[in-house]
Image (cartoon, rainbow, N blue to C red; front, side, top):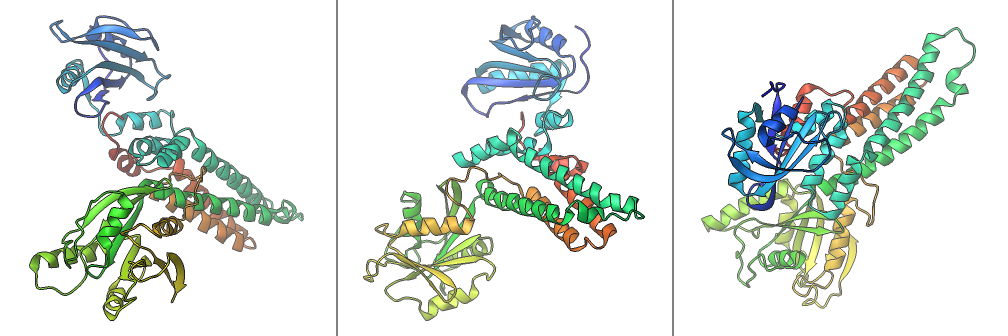
Length: 448
């Protein structure tokens, strides 16, 4: 056969295990000879071709479909071959090994998408949206990832960058022509333009922070004294009997985790051992793990018994809870205390009266958790942002705010705007270090 261009990559693109269909994906340059050697056929671009997949001796490995996408009209921008066969692990492995004997190498995680980025088929934000769409844990997260993949987020960033370029041009024109008597900054209303730019940037940052919850979810830790109903509340929120509930203190001895969703926001509910002094070494391990979980929480639900209200022991627990973490006081067993479900604020804390056993008032808790997450139901314009996106937007917001304050110092104002533009451009990958790209794509699954 004709020689194959170097650096052809291959991977099984479908999930491990048995399935009705399995896909092996190949990407590289000039792959028609590769396809002919594998199938004894030369497939037409974008046409379905039925073929036998042959080993090096000409024996049939499997029979299936060959799809050929010629460069640059493919996902990676290179020639791409997709082999769709029967989804047994052995068949997929044999096809993979055959491709390797033909000169391909196993693709690194995310390498197909990385090639799409390097060949200008996707920008960096869109490439990250590919992984986010695959990893989406709720329908809302999937919709947001799909919007980013289609370029909605990138277009917003590009529009902000173009506005920054215009502002920089106006500012730097003053530097280039200092002898002009006309005050270009005042004449072109730079101050108001910059104020509107910052308003729009802050709006995008707020939507990005709200959307980030769709990716990571909210870590909600249940804590309190033994027998205040933590496990009952976990069961109520999850809709299943996940935790053992008894009248005996110390029943929960380890950290229990359950993932639920409220209005599209994933919540990682963590039930912990009751906090108390104990001589039981097993229970003490559970209590130690409870304190570790509390340090990593986004929000703490401290349960107290509504019949006794907040006791000295409850106050001792409160004193040890992380100060920087949002905390809600859950007055559980409200039905037994003769209290109606309600939300009140007391001492700077939100108190929710509810019954985990009957479910009365739990809707108040769900609404409060959405408030803590900064989520408003039905938001369709949130951005499924990553931490680096939020950091870049925050940096751009800080630099643009500095630029506004330094309008009277033209050189400093121009420099702040330049830094703001660089921060925004890093989101789509216009300015990205190689080590950043390696870190991003290494987190992708193999075959994508």
